[in-house]
Image (cartoon, rainbow, N blue to C red):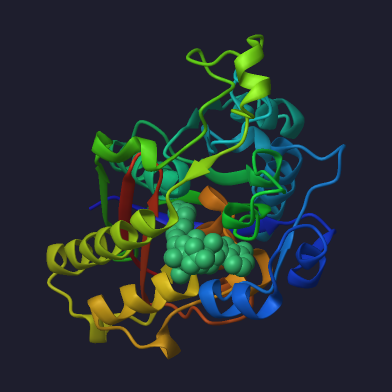
Amino acid sequence: MLRARITGTGSAVPDKVLTNQDLEKMVDTNDEWITTRTGIKERRIAAKDEYTSTLAIKAARSALEMVSVSPEQLDMILVATVTPDFPFPATACIVQNELGANNAVAFDITAACSGFLYGLSMADAYIKTGAFKKILVIGAELLTRIVDFTDRNTCILFGDGAGAVLLEPSEEEKGILSTHIYSNGNHWQLLYLPGLGTRNPVTEQKTMDERLYYLRMEGNDVFKYAVRAMGDAATAALEANGCTADDVKLLIPHQANRRIIEATGKRVGIPLERIFVNLHKYGNTSAASIPIALDEANRSGRLNPGDLVLMAAFGGGFTYASALIKW
Ligand code: COA
């Protein structure tokens, strides 16, 4: 049976670090509050001349270099992002151009923080049919461009970054075992960006006056839904493969809040020692969080051949998703 296998991983974050102490000087907050409520200590913030594509391209090059695959060999580039360079064209097309991936089809996926796992699910399906062979899935975000740095409820949470994986077909019993993707549009207003689209065009005064170009979030409601949704998605992955939590070598959850991660682990039955956490360094990088974590886990030797790796995400929409991989 043909499976899609992750062969290369890469990631990139901006150089500039924004610490909790820096935020103390910007809004009424403190390191102790942010650390205990979220687990975040610092996040990366892009320079003025860095865009979502800048980080996406760096992460992509790093994943391709790992396995010596050239951009011309790529058949498809998927970029999951809610902070594209432009409303159109797709950031994936900008990445394609910069890489010189002239034989690839390229498009973006909008599924907020679940975007990377949505992309993985699509790539898996395309590879299994045999229609496409080498697919690059990238999660890339510059969330600090849509965050209000005068709103302490949101500005402490988010950061910038990108992660990429290369997927290739494999005849071996290795690779993506299953993906599950879900949406629940009933709650879209709990986490969204009101401006910059067609409802509140940037050309209207209201968009400026009401600062509609910054994301809005009902933190408490999002928190509760996130724990349930990530837990359900992760459990679905285990059940579909006849596995238990004990079989999982590493859970790589979306990095939104340490308390959400811990509660998800508890719900699924995976202890913290087997959960990958790096949000203290980067905050919530939305679609980029899982591929950055996966790349760090891969490069630091935490993944061995045959390991079962479970990934689970949750994001605006609401969207949620999981993937189970045999490394
Ligand atoms: N510094 C200090 N105090 C803050 C603060 C900050 N940065 N942000 C909020 N507070 C205050 C609130 O104003 C509130 O004060 P009050 O009791 O006087 O009204 C108090 O802290 C508690 O706020 P609350 O919202 O209940 O805190 P919380 O424990 O729910 O934590 C979040 C807030 C945002 C960290 C948490 O709800 C969360 O992580 N939600 C999920 C967000 C998320 O992951 N979004 C992306 C999903 S992909």
